Image 1 (cartoon, rainbow, N blue to C red):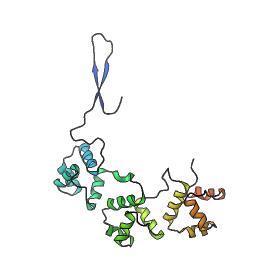
Image 2: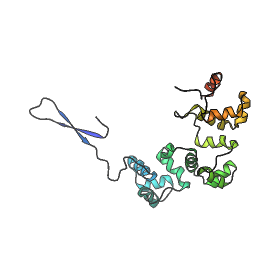
Image 3: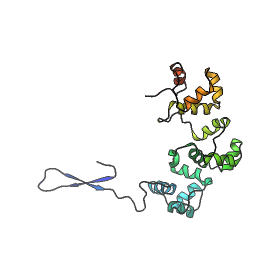
Image 4: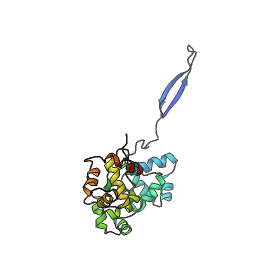
Length: 218
């Protein structure tokens, strides 16, 4: 029996048992069963909770017409309203975005920060944040520990390779390839080749990799 179905029990005089006749459940008018936009997520959550647009507006701290505009797709929530929106939703529908630039922007907006605000927090110019979010440049190594606090580490990503996880670990620690190479008694080129997947670390480093949580996975 599939979810979202009601069962009608029909009894016939020539039958000794009841028949189950599935009837597809009809969602309320305008209910976004498979939301795609942030506005549709807001509408779905509101209808699931049985709230009016006015009640949602009070919870988030905006006007009724603002919520109406979000749900109708007239405009998207401003950065300053996103923390309240995400609290109302109970999750971030954008959490599945891929790539560093998109994840950084989603994390910044989830905190209600402008590019200038994030730049002040990290000690960089707003244009630097803009370049990061548009994939023009990558942050210097000293900024990665703070950035990973915002967007999370890739160490737990099941599709990540050993090189991906090694790179994520190095960034989380804020060390350069040369510094990690010195720690392990290797050359910088060796670390670079591991991270780019050109070759796998020798077996003698397997225990160290396992201790860091980035060993080879089946």
